Length: 128
Image (cartoon, rainbow, N blue to C red; front, side, top):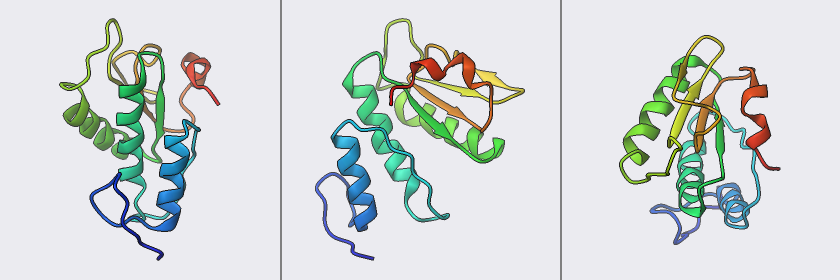
């Protein structure tokens, strides 16, 4: 699968994964769709850390196909990042589904959601 060493990650990513990392490092927005176990999650956590380190204004939107996965990813984000990154007046993460919200999706840095979930409340913060 074209796996090669890459100093950005502790394993040998495939070519498509390196291409996505290159886009993220160039500060471009990406939309990743791939089969289960293809390596999407490590890319999302790489992007989350990058956005948290960059400034206090960027937002990353993680769209999960199910509420169960939203809960799982939100818990992982809480565990990985909430103690390391403090941003004045902004929460590190929020969860937003049609019938459940945790933290404020309009002022968070990482939004974990499902499609569609009233994107009108937070979509203006996303840059293309």
